Image 1 (cartoon, rainbow, N blue to C red):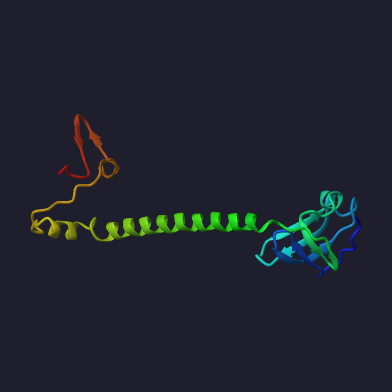
Image 2: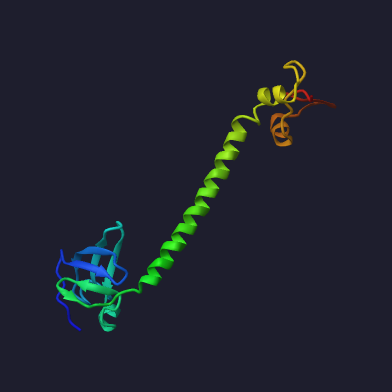
Length: 154
């Protein structure tokens, strides 16, 4: 099937996504497989290819003024909507968990707030650095048989 494709032609894919042709190419001269490029309403770009032509443009409902009539089943689009909704719910749950962790870092893991929560007077609590912090802070200097540390162990 031959279709005349021009820059600016409207394109509607079989799934209902619409766009416009942004470039047309001569097969074998400009590209190997791309007949035209399309910019879709979702901001993404796509191609009309030589294999599309060979399979009677089955991925498309409309190209330019030619109505091809290929349509995706509504149930298939409903499935994609349900899958997208499930992904959104997963992301919302992940966001809620991350916000909870952030809250915990800012409140419960603050030494002063923790001390108040367990009724420890400010002069009674100490902050013990992690092992990696202690290791990084210690620099042993050897002077004869004596070893000196730049930080004191608590």
